Structures are given as structure tokens and as C-alpha cells.
Image (tube, rainbow, N blue to C red; front, side, top):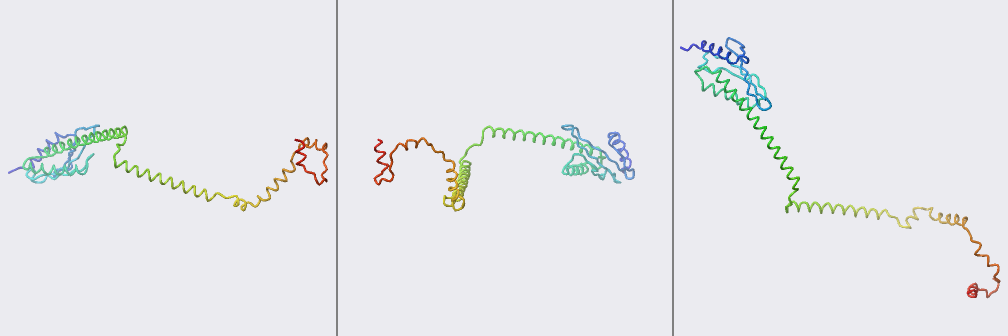
Length: 240
């Protein structure tokens, strides 16, 4: 007959010696304890950590222990679900044998795999960004390749823009023509124009300078303006 208590006590002593820094007893009846499992250091010294809680049932190891993840660090929800599934598979495969060490070892291996996956994802993202940068630089250097499709698209857009510019210009010219006033409209709009010309002549008359030397020889002429036959034109002819 199997002495379950004896097997459980022996395993606890072995577990405590294997994981002295991460093993912690929570209760003796039933035997309840936790073990913190940490992955190997990954890139940038990143690590993943989970704390597993185990409870011995009365007929352990013929029946699997109860287990759960009570805390975790740097794990996605999907990874947590994967670890719980792994524990279930390992427990079923090791029924009849003490299995805590086996379960903990399987979890640590899975954590190391997750760290490697994280490293691979980061490297892939880095390569992807470098490739995108190279492609962008290549496109910037070569320019856009002209095809029939993109040329026709550019041509249609260019013609539309030119038509819009022409339409705006015509509209501005039409508006400018409407705003330009004729002389009659200016005269009708400004009633001061009719008096301004007269005022200009008056102001000019007061300031006209006369060259008197032009009229000095007129006194020597024998002019009889009362003579009916007087004709200034004939005087000009005689002078010639």
C-alpha cells in the first residue's frame, strides 16, 4: 500500500534543497507551497518570471497536485494560458510519480523559449525597419517610375488645375471691367468736375506771364484799324 504522506514529505525536502531561494511553504495541512521560476537572461538582460503554487491532494502522486500561477512578470495572457496547458499535460503524463520538479523544469524551459521568441521578434522588427528605410531611400533616389496610369492621372490633375486658374483669371478680368468707369460716369459721379475746370482757368489767368518784348515793334506800325480795307493778312504779306 502506497504511503502518500511519506512520498510527499520526501519530495518537499528535495524541492527545498533544489530551490532554496524560491521555495516557500504556505501551509502544512494540506501541504501548500510556492516556487518562483525565472527564465535565463535574454537580450538586454530581459527575464520572464512566474510564481507557481502547488497543493498536494490526499492521494498525490497517484492523483495530480492542484496548481496555479499566482504571479507573473513580462508574460502575455496567451503565454500564461500556454503554461497552464503545459502543466496539465505534464501532470497527466507523470501520474504515479512525484512530479513537482518535472513540472517546474518544463515551465522553466517554456519561459526560455518565450525569451528566445521575444529576441527573434525584435530582430525581425529591426530587419523590417532597416529594409523599409532602404526601400524609402531607394525610392527617394530613383524618383517615381512613370507609367501610363500615373501619367494620365497627373495629366488630368494638371489640366484641371490650369482650367481653374484660367477661370479665376477670367472672373477677375470681368470683375475689373465692371468696376472701370467711363468718362461720363466719372463726370456724373463727381459733380465738382464742371467747376474744377473753371477754377483752373481762373487760377491760371492770375498767374500768366507776358513777354512784353514781343509787342515793342507794334508802335512803329501805321495801323488804321478804322480803314474798311484794313487786313492784317496783307501786312504780313508786305513784311515778307
